[in-house]
Image 1 (cartoon, rainbow, N blue to C red):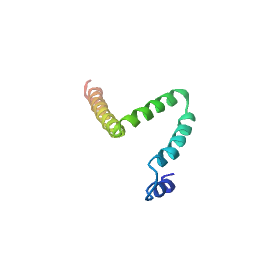
Image 2 (image 1 turned 60 degrees about the horizontal axis):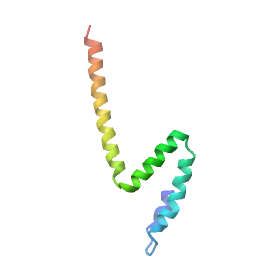
Image 3 (image 1 turned 180 degrees about the vertical axis):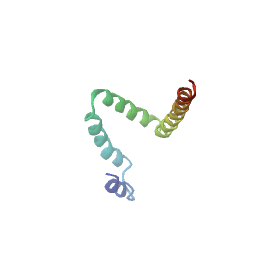
Length: 85
């Protein structure tokens, strides 16, 4: 999609609403094809993303920090399991 869409939206003189007219129906179709709980989560994410442009970066940073914390806890529990006899 991006290989076709990117050259089109970067053309000089394009209407700024052009992108949303193309992408929004595609996103809506994708969201509607998901199961109910994922659909609700995707709609929430789309709404939140429209309000906050850096939401994906912030979410990725938060998830990375949580993964590091869980990995650290896993190493501690592994050490207890091995050396705790």
